[in-house]
Image (cartoon, rainbow, N blue to C red):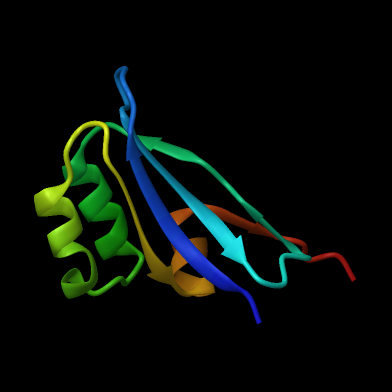
Length: 91
C-alpha cells in the first residue's frame, strides 16, 4: 500500500510555491505531478478545496519561509483533488 506525501517548497519567479506528491512504497500505477502556485494563500485554498483539514496544514503555512521545505501525508483522493498525482487507469 503506497503512502502519498504532499511536498511544498519555495522557488523564485511569479509562481514561487512548488507543490508536488511523492509516493512511498508500491509506486506502480502512480506518478507524482508538480504544480506551481503564486502564493501561500493559493496553497491554502488548494488544500482546503481538496478537503484537507486546516489543522493538518495550518502550522506549515504559518511557519513556511522562503528556502524551506515541508511535507505531510495525504490520501490518494486528496492528491487527486490537488492535481499532484496521475494514476494509470489502463486495464
